[in-house]
Length: 174
Image 1 (cartoon, helix red, strand yellow):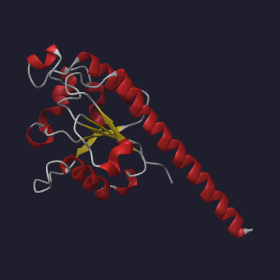
Image 2 (cartoon, helix red, strand yellow):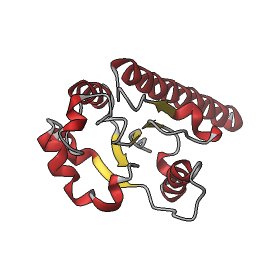
Image 3 (cartoon, helix red, strand yellow):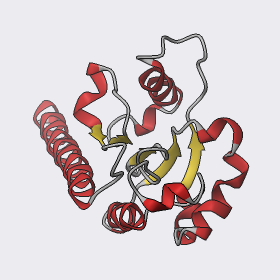
Image 4 (tube, helix red, strand yellow):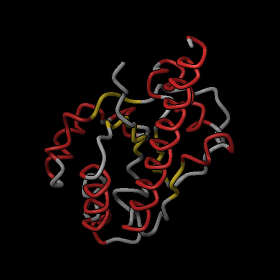
């Protein structure tokens, strides 16, 4: 059975555009160049599909392909496979995590390998998958390396568990 590609849950504000960068001054749709390079690094070194977890999904989802293209990320638009659902009645401090959890519940084939890149706090149960960015700086090379490390560890765990289960099956037959 083919394995599903890893998922990158992507926030925008505080990740791709940030308060400390001059590009934030130019408008909400201008991404910080260093953050774009860091995102490219994650996407170029992984087979990640993108799920938008940003509040942008509420009012700007249709514009995201154009915004990606404007910021030099047009080649990655086909990797955007969806967005997290809105759960407006969830408590503010757990809302993002609840929305990501709901998306994973609805798409269980992706539960094995994912990373969350966000400047917000994420609930404890999702913390091992979270790369928290600094609102003032946005996504950095170090953040990108951490995201790739999370994906590599999850890939290794999945590979080891797959080998174990094949061995167990062979032992049960013999």
